[in-house]
Image (cartoon, rainbow, N blue to C red; front, side, top):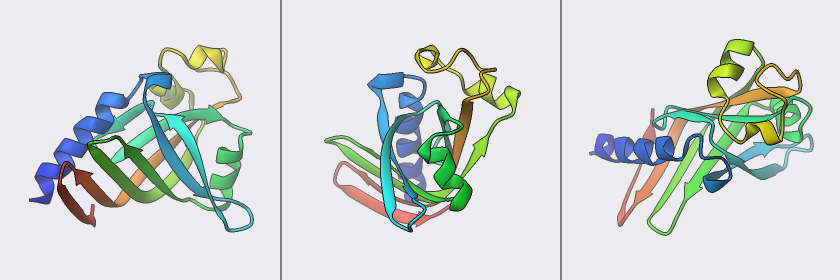
Amino acid sequence: MNEKFIVKAGKIIEGKAGLGMDAYCVLALIDHEGYPTASTLSIAKADGINWITFGTGLDSNKANRIKNCNKASVCITSASYNITLVGTVEVLTDLETKKDMWYEGMEYHFTGPDDPSYCVIRFKTIRYNLLVGDDEVSGNL
């Protein structure tokens, strides 16, 4: 039964990828004092609920927080669904990944995929809580 909801949630997430300001989600990280912090970000790409990537600045608070603690949560919500994922994050700086995750609109923040201040955050799901319509499922990947 969970597989049906995992696929449905994955399609929702993938449908938001690369839309820039038209498709935000919330990324929660732990700050240097141990408190949770939440930021809205646009999804660069996704593989269902398995992984999601985001573009950000290498010297941003988000990238710095990840260096201290790689635990994170992502929440994507609307009036008809709430997708909450818990997992780990990493900061990627290799040019191939940066090119692959680049989407229209990023040029407002960075000169291009080869901009040294641009990096990619990759979130990998460990567990999930999916509320789609009136149905709710939780589990581990």
